[in-house]
Length: 57
Image 1 (cartoon, rainbow, N blue to C red):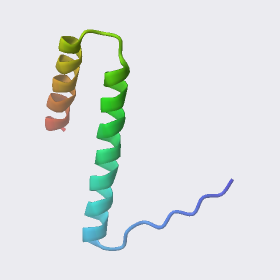
Image 2: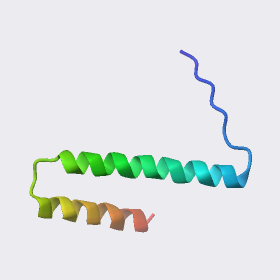
Image 3: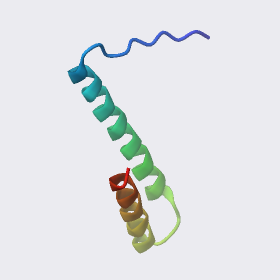
Image 4: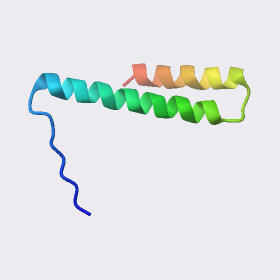
C-alpha cells in the first residue's frame, strides 16, 4: 500500500497540524486512562503525571 502525504508548506499550517496531532494524542491518552479499572484517584494521579511529563519536554 502506498500512502501520499502532503505536509504543510507554511509555518502557520505546520503549527495547526502540530496542534491537531497533540489534541488527538491527548484524547487517546485520556480515553485509555478512562478505560482502566483502577480507582478514580489513581486515574487522576496518572493524568497529573502525564501533564508533568509533558511540561518537562
